[in-house]
Image (cartoon, rainbow, N blue to C red):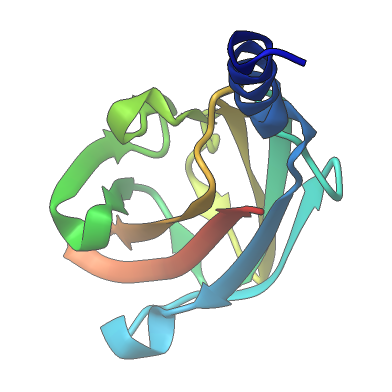
Length: 158
C-alpha cells in the first residue's frame, strides 16, 4: 500500500471512528450543597449505550414535599462559565457549547405537586462528538428563588 493510500485510509478511519464510539452517562444529585427542597432519586436514559449522533432521552425522578408554581432553570456548562437560564414551566431548547449537543426540556406543566415527579430531557448528541467527557449541571429554583433541585450529568465518549 502506498503512503498516500495509507494516509487516505487513516483519515477515513478517523472520520468514521467517532460514530462507532459509545457514550456512557453518569449522574449525581448536588442538591444537598444548594439546600434544595427536592432530591433527584434516580436518572435513567435510553438508549442505554448511545452512540454519537443519537437522540438520548433522560428521565429524572425527583422527590419533594409541597408544590412548585415556578421552575426557573439554569443549565451550566464548562464549570459554570456558560449558563443558559430558562423557564422550566414553559420548557426550552438549549445548544451546548461547540454544538456538541442540543438539550430540550419539555414544559413541566406547572404547578407540580409532590411527593414525586418525573422530569424528561432530550439530548441530541453531535455525530462528531469528540472523545472525552462533558458535564452539565442543572440547577432549578422554585418560587421565591428557593432551590428546588440540582443534578449533574456527565457524558463520556469513549
